[in-house]
Length: 244
Image (cartoon, rainbow, N blue to C red; front, side, top):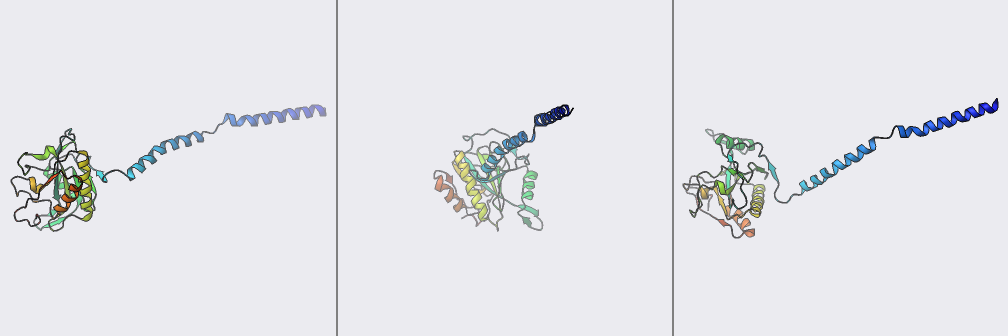
């Protein structure tokens, strides 16, 4: 009888151990595969972030999705664009009371209200806002012609840059740096032949006198140091001593 009990106990212990040994196979861990999948998804994101923090060329913020006016969709290539036009713009708060400021949203609203735009807008802190894709034709030059008379209506062959400034408050150092980087970046991608101010091309002459308060010689000298074949102009505007 004792031998039978010992045999039964041994059998029961063997079955218990066997059942315990099989348990891990019946309920495998499922969190390990999820951890691997998470790492595979994060790795490309880390690479993208690194690339974004050290881009080639100027830092540009794209706001083209906000701008639905002031341009014509096109498919321009580098052979279609050979002019860079520099403008000035500021926000008119109250014309009657001569109240103005540098509010960016106010400037953009004025473009919208006037049905105009430029490809780029440079804010006072040097931020470059991309308003219109370069392949599209922005309505920034209006009635215009090259000073040599070789071409009129320059929107289709130009890229427009607006710099937020006033006649008594010219561009900031940050804006000069951003403008320089942006122009050189454009020149590296297009066969730019002319770097002009709005005042140089607006017809009839004297219709426009911007960009205001800008050291144009400084801008041209820096760009021509890298692109010496670009044609620039220094045409005075009547009653505007800023253009010397």
